[in-house]
Image (cartoon, rainbow, N blue to C red):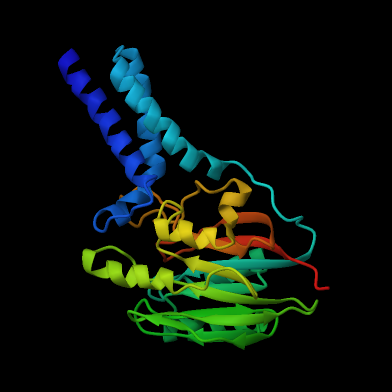
Length: 315
């Protein structure tokens, strides 16, 4: 039994150390690492468990290896559960809500109830089909959010932005059948902010990874004008492309508020996979972040996410 336990300890320590080295290396291999790295928070927990087990069995070398992995992965994961500082959150408020409609079959009434509760100024939709758009607008979405830039499409490639304030349409990002709509919102207080309803391809299979990579790389980097990216990124904060996007000058609302370990996919009942955080609201670092929320929506495999932001005062 001690031999079996020793193998288990070394297996846990070795796997955790290899994971940590690859995660922190600045190198991201292709399949299957791209979908697997989403589970880094679980790998951090595994490293901690391996450390405790190695210590209990007095396996000093294995404990040292597990300790190094635990510390390395802890530095990557733990800050997501700790609220950060940032710009003073006392400017013009802007409420953002994003929802993936799962090929348009998400429950219309439930989404309208969510809109009533959250009272968003901006609603970013993904996987918006023509039928789903007709149902939502018939249910009164345009009365609540009268300004819209929509690109409905059969299948998973449609998206839209609905807003309480005027929207100036921008050039949508079209890659691999996925459309990520863009628009500039003109706030009554004078602020202008570009919005993107984000939805690159899902890297579920090896042949889809070039499309996924291109979709994330095509997202605008932070800078002028102010920008907010919201939706289903099909990526976590452990993906290199997401870290590069954030490094350009964005902040993740969940990470800022200490909610970065709350999972958004899959929603309960949509598969046995462990939950991961792939739905985000990214805001330019000049924008304040007051709060972040994860919600439920019947009929879809994603949890909608929301954030209350504050736009900087216009001089």
